[in-house]
Amino acid sequence: MNWFSRLLSLDGAKDIMPWRGRQVSTENADNFVTNQVTLADYRDARASGAAIGLSATWACVQLIAGTIASLPLMVYRTDASGIRSVAKDHPLYFVLHDSPNYDQTAVDFWEVMAASIELHGNAYALMERRSSDGVLTALHPIRPDLVKVRRKANGDLEYEWTDNGRRVVKPGAQVLHIRGSLGDALSGASTLSMCRSVFDDALAAEDAAGAMFSNGVNPSGILRTKPEIKLTQQQRNELEDLLIKKYQGSIRQGRPMLLDNGLEWQQLSIDPADAQMLESRKFSGEQICRIFGVPPGMVGFGDKASNWGTGKEVDVLGFQKFTLRKRLKRIEQALLKQLVPLAERRAQGITIEFNFEGLLRGDTASRYDAYEKAIRMGIATRNECRALENLPPVEGGDVVTVQMQDIPLADAINGDRNGQEDSTGS
Image 1 (cartoon, rainbow, N blue to C red):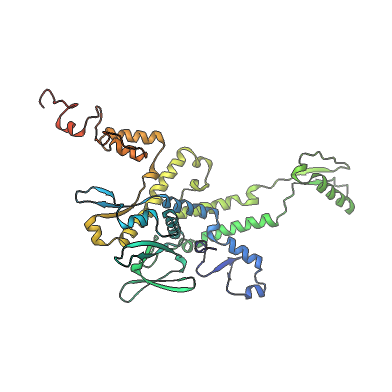
Image 2: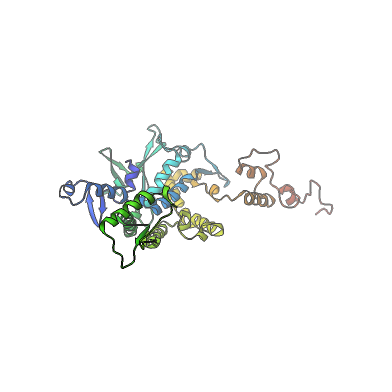
């Protein structure tokens, strides 16, 4: 099991797994010797006892973390005139946008960091700097469930964790720390801990449903006789053997059944809501969606009406505005505060932001309509709009034009019409 799988467990730091209302320690062999828990039960609890194993939790974390990781993280520079441009020459650009470390791409790295924030309320990464000038060259993620943060006497933060059995202690200046919501300077609030009861209830519903299907009896029908007819044990055995040999299995489905001596076949059906406890499991899933701020329809919950058409569009828009925006802002401000010195921020106007444009793009017709309005109103040039569609520039496409005659903006301000002065002289 890799470190990310372990950090997703409900109590990864303590290595304790819930089992039928009790806590099973992995370090206490007496649990097995005294038969308090069987090895099979323990393995089942370890495999299914993590909240991330719930489909709703997995889907919500995948949606949030995957969406954040898919957004390009950009470094911008604002000059003295207020014009902002992408600072591709800045050392942070390659680390944040392309490759945070030797092993991971930017998508891999930020997906892990975002998932850590969602589940544990904290994301940590060890900074690797060049010894000659202190320029940041890499960021290495750290398991959040292993990190302990404390404040020293001089006010600085100190981080401690174990790596391959080795104790590691680093000052705050060498550890990138992105805190989740409702925390303090030392750490954010862990979702798994704060909402433990919700996850426990959802796990209990899943376990109960699984136990029903593994241990329950679910016959497709029964053979019944009239009250005055009593079958001997031999007749019962012969009927059971006949049913198994001639009618059991999908390959024998549809074969006609001959009954005599007053026997009748009665079809049985089990209410799905009772058998699978669909309502309780659906409610648990919606509760988990509520915790992460994800519209249920975006992860397969909710009714059919919310999963299509305008209902889906409203869900996506709300997810972008109220769920993603605050998470992106939290990451951006943490990176700017910890990775860019204040003097550099003031002198060069360095900012770090996710490029949200790709996520907001509509269909082809909507995009082209927006481009047309932007060009007509003088907001963007044709080449700027072509660049958004990954098209090469055209000659003369950098001129800003206005509505109606598409004349240069400067000519419209000076009163020139298609290169000719106004005949009235005004």
